[in-house]
Length: 228
Image (cartoon, rainbow, N blue to C red):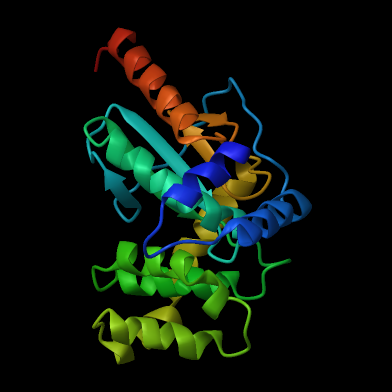
């Protein structure tokens, strides 16, 4: 994981943890979540119209990431994932799915609800980014909801609708459906990534991540065409 730390040191801007915070985050990852191990099994992961997509919508390579907004390791990986999407924006379709680890993260579920509620006003990714960038601000306190409401205001959302949507059955059902899917797929913890249906070990560097995407893109070119 050393390469992840080196990458993050170079990514200065809105999201910088610092060496100590990265070490703490990685420790939390190994303590709380089982590392994602690779599998040759191609899983049937549902991609539906309500899913949130970044990158090439019709890309030949699909990367599905199961994440938890209160998970320190997810926050560490987030800038890496964003750079991978940018590096491979012509071929890579990234799909985010919620897997809040509610047994160990008290505010994970409300974080997921905030992102989905923002999505109902067309600003899922803006809230998604803010939740990871400001993770230490909102996720550890007793006033998480108040802080999330302030984020909605900063994003110029209709805060009344945002609050209502956070409490809505539609938002809750979407999150729970994704949690159920994660459990069915045997997702061991967060973050966990599936590349064209195969679970991969969480890459330890940008170069390793890009290499996996390139290999998947090449494989998709040579894959036989199935008659419709």
